[in-house]
Structure formats: C-alpha cells, structure tokens
Image 1: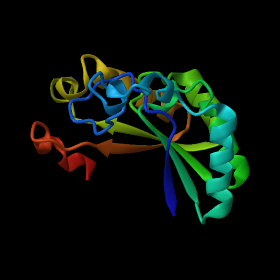
Image 2: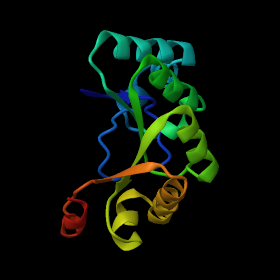
Image 3: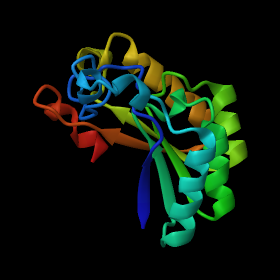
Image 4: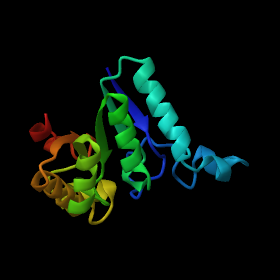
Length: 171
C-alpha cells in the first residue's frame, strides 16, 4: 500500500480548486482562536517519529509527501531520508515552484524515487488562471530539471470545467 503524508498545510500557490481548507485567510484555522499555534508544521523530531511508525507498523511500500507544498518544509530532505531508512520508497508531490537542479539532486541523494508534478493544462493560458500567473512555466522548469537530473517523474492532472478538454494526454 501507498500512504500519503501531508508534510505541511502551507502552499506557495492559491489554486482556485484547492481542497486544502487549512491554508486560506477564510480557513477553519484562521477562524479559530488557536489558529496561530495550530498553523505550524509538526516539529522535525515528531514528523520523523510518525514516519517511522507508519512504515514499521503498516505494510506501507510507498510514502508520498504532499501538502500544501511539501518543498516548503525546510526539513523535507531529512523526512525523505527517514522514510527510506525506515524501509519504504519515497515520492514527493510538488507544484515545482521551489525545485531547481540542486534541490532535485538533493532529493535523489536522500532517496526520493519519484517527483510528481501537478498540471492544470497544457499551456499557460489554461493552467495559470487556475493556479496563478507564471505557475505553468515554473512547473515545466522543475519537470525539466527532474528529467535532466535522472529523476523518475509522474504527472497529475486536476480536471475542472475550465480545462477538461486538455485532460486526454494525461490519461
């Protein structure tokens, strides 16, 4: 089995379709009197303990780091290494905004087996209105860096009314 590990609720994009209720200004956390203290990511030590427990107490063969945007965690490399050392494969789902050749190399070095990129269209004209100006080009640049770095890549397409006509190449 594969398990998704939400490494952070934080994201550097504000996609129109996003299901992440925790991140926006009108979120559940924003309305909570304890929102500020709950918004932080789990401390590294705690996250590593949870990862080790997931891997050792389940039949987990693949741990996928997601978010929010997982690459916003300063300790993501450490968390990926923890998953690998615990005995499972590791994948990172990303919008690619923070991934350059150096970060891709670092992820591969600590044992990330695949980077999965999310697309909402085949061009900036379709993708960017859903995810933000310039996001298509940033995701494409990260995808190219991953391929040049020898990383296995996966693509995810988020289908909406606005882009459904462009879904076929992703199927």
